[in-house]
Amino acid sequence: MLVERSRGSAADFHARALPQPLTSVAVWLLALDRPALVLGSGQREDVADVDAARALGVDVVRRNSGGGAVLLVPGGCLWVDVLLPRGDSRWVDDVGRSSHWLGEVWARALRGLAVDASVHRGPLERTTWGRLICFGAVGPGEVIVNGRKVVGISQRRTRDGARLQCLVLERWDPAALLDLMVLTSAERTRAIEELIDVAAGVGVSLDALEAAFLVQLEMSVSN
Image (cartoon, rainbow, N blue to C red; front, top):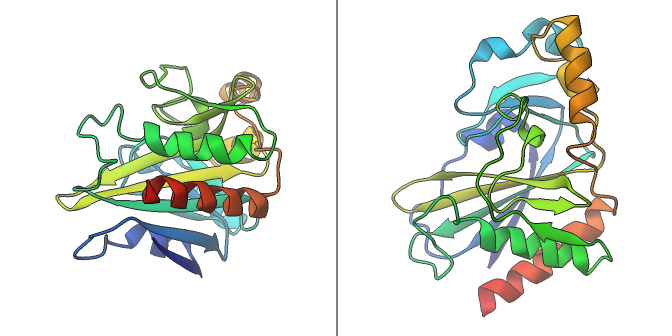
């Protein structure tokens, strides 16, 4: 299993293409050099308050995978991309089940750190803010602790394989994210109230979780 560490901007990371050919599982550990508001592939650009983001030194970029917006802060998140070849034994054609295995890797890593984590195996939740905010709803394969989402997973597929993008937050601060979205004052207040309990920071050291995840992923790939 190839593990590559990189530091740079969210825009550069999201612009990366899958290696050609993709023949084995690989891991990209991506560290940010500046904050970024990342929109999902299906979101309109006008959902973001670009002027507010620029004033705070936050890049506004778009990823090629689905889901809602997420705020990435250097040192405050763990961003791991897992590259999976189409011919791998873990590959599942059904997108609704295709990340279950990866969610279980994260859950085992968290349980090894004394965090009681579980994998969401149902469909994408339909919530008031889920289409706007990534951590506002739980999707297939994502990881939950005490009823709150702690690991987000999105993916982009090509003919050769998939790029499964995983994000863990050190702390969940919906207000900081919502301040960068185009909302009325009333909408922002309601969103903060309704989002505060749907997600959470992971509650353990991000470095410790990264190490535990790589161990569990290596075990999964080797079996």
